[in-house]
Amino acid sequence: MKLSVYITRKLPDEVLQPLLEKFTVRMWESEEVAVPRDVLLQESERADALLTMISDSIDAELMGVAKNLKVISNLAVGFNNIDTEAAKQRGIVVTNTPDVLTETTADLTFALVMAAARRMTSAERALRDGEWTSWSPLGFTGQDVWGTTIGIIGMGRIGEAVARRAKGFGMEVLYCNRSRNAEAEEMLGALRKELDELLAESDHVVMLAPYTDETAGMIGARELALMKPTATFISASRGGIVDEDALYDALKKGTIWAAGLDVYATEPVPSNHPLLSLPNVTAVPHIGSASVRTRMEMMRVSMQAITDVLEGKNPKHRVV
Ligand code: 8YV
Image (cartoon, rainbow, N blue to C red; front, side):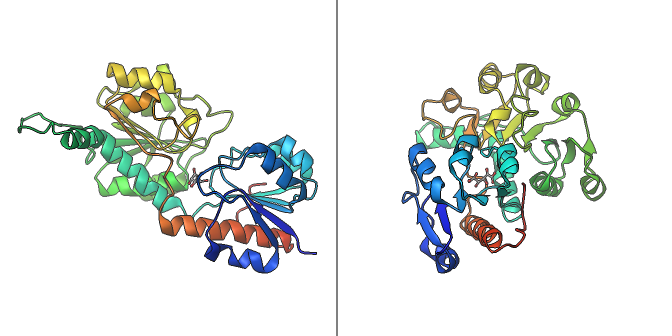
């Protein structure tokens, strides 16, 4: 009997082909709506492999019913939706999709720096709403990106890719990371700082740290108050790292200049989310890795991981 794979969101037929040839593949047939919890639990009971999204909570309860489960392949580089301890205890392999999304996510992150600094969202809205009625010397003015200082919190692969872009804009690069990143220091001249120093000295603060017990809520009112009133805050890894109420207050009061957001504490975000009401927020719906090429590559990588584990091979990107 063929081994069984469950995929928690509809994926295009052409990328599924390699799995279909080898395994019995079942799939939640919606691209937009997340698989309901009861369906996920039921499907997990018989699955040898799960291909999951960050919106799926893959916890100990699920692993408890998933008696045959050998591999959880997450379609993301982040894997905070998976209880990795529970997986380890049960001998379940967990994989992710790094590398293929690095440059695409860095592009979007840098775009958010520029959009927030130059307040592109509110300028565009004014234009569309017919409010561009005359030229004024200080109309629609923002803050510069070129020649300023960027502070990157979380200097991993994506952080380095953002730093490379920043060098092209003549920026100085500061970073804060659990461990030293010698390559970023030597190749990009990045300077390692304590968090408070980085916040105080940067013109653009970019959050790229993974969501862990250590980073949850690490940016709150105290941290935002350390930033320059002309500075931008960019959230591009996981929303739960930032206290959104504190961010709202800082943006509303003008403690900081603007924010660029790709990620939120709870996703998807309702359209009446307070942060979306602010003119100095540029917000996109978690699209860091969302180029056609990259998403197709991520799917390919996550399917290859399933094939590898089910065929007894070592997958390339194993996190457990
Ligand atoms: C994913 C992400 O595209 O990789 C990550 O960790 O946040 C995004 O790149 C998204 O999570 C889809 O599952």
